[in-house]
Length: 127
Image 1: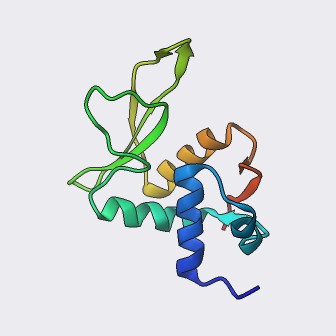
Image 2: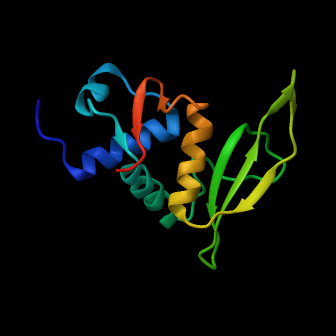
């Protein structure tokens, strides 16, 4: 197994955060799990390109989960909605985050569903 570079770790962190899945080979490259700081770096790259994470916010579009947005003034917002019944979604709950780290932490905690891991990949919350 080759050493994992910072760019490789960020790419794997991004894929896990966007798709909520890594294949067996990718999991083997990060046996201890993904570091929160790597996910924050990945999200920062996406937001720097002017795109929300993990998907664009489109007025009227339906989505479930959390979307992170960085506005022109630098403020970071989370927009969250969940299924509340068959084919029914809650209203969007938008909150200004204290920081990008806080927004990403919230995103990951929602994606993990309280499990501390995403698709069996541990999240290293303190790293």
